[in-house]
Amino acid sequence: MKTTTAIFDMDGLLIDSEPLWHAAAQQCLSKFNMVIEEHEYAKTTGLRTKEFLQHWFNVFAVDPANIPAVEREITDCVIAMFNEKGKMMNGALEALELVKKTSLKIGLASSSPLALIQAVLQKTNMEGVFSVVASAEHLPFGKPHPQVFINCAIELGSHPTECICFEDSFNGLLAAKAARMKCIVVPHPDHFHQSHWSIADLRLDSLLSLKANEFNQLMA
Image 1 (tube, rainbow, N blue to C red):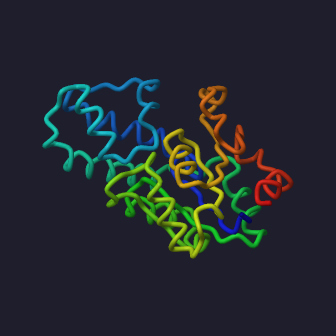
Image 2: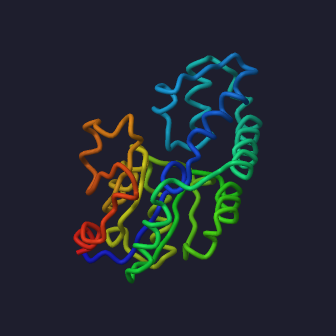
Image 3: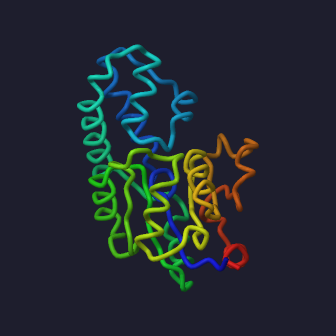
């Protein structure tokens, strides 16, 4: 089926927010004597904050009744950090410009809370780039469940099989493929050579590496 729609993830793909999420988590979880090493933290990249906390509270045997308050605390911390020192990922603007030159509809589908998405779009002047913004914040399941991608496609008036996604996390890649969408993935450099990325339609070391001819071939 011909590609009509491009859907972008946000965290770690368009904005360099993963270090902020990690720092906010370490700061907010220190009161519970929880320390998550970076290589362990990477395993939960792409999950919603609630699911991230459910996983690690279970690992560290912390009372899950604390989750709602800590979830809000982490989100507020990330928003404050991004407003202070947040930046775009290398190649993000160039990739968006490349896609904008096509006839594709463009959407954003993120696991992040809508408050953070809105803060990011405002700070980066990307408010007019996406015709639809979808958040998994209040969905029954987040990525790797495909619902946020499917919802974004429906709001754009597109069938999921007409969509191509841009992702950076393995959970996001699984969500895109579960939605029967094509997927371009930009893994963290430390994880680039891991074999599980092979299910992507295209693997890039940076959005700066996206070439018009490669993208056009994927759209065909």
